[in-house]
Length: 160
Image 1 (cartoon, rainbow, N blue to C red):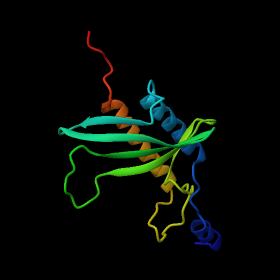
Image 2 (image 1 turned 60 degrees about the vertical axis):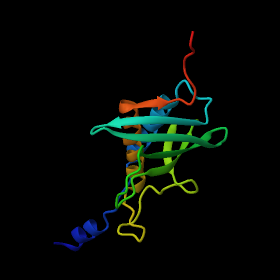
Image 3 (image 1 turned 45 degrees about the horizontal axis):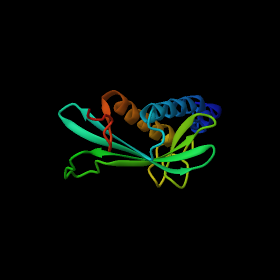
């Protein structure tokens, strides 16, 4: 093997696929819009998700900081009935919505994730951590759209 081939193999760095990341952000923005549609004036949206094996889960979206072009939403997901397991069964994340460009992405509330991380690293983050977290958001929102229903605090009908 020549020195040029060795250098080429060792200098191969992960390059984030920005087109895929942006497309995922746009689709997540649309998914969140579908979940909130008709109830945009609310500050919190609650959903029940029924999956195989009679497992009920809850998804809560809570509006946080808002500005002219951005909004932050706290997302919480977990089982309806807490179970004592050896691992954490709940998920919480902060999603920032960029209204001017129609993109949603996961932040942790005080920082944004980088597009790429060196591997290995002390925090045990994947090289494409940002894409994977946003894909997890996409999967969760799609699950809610397909198998969830809105939980209303008020009745949506009146008795005659």
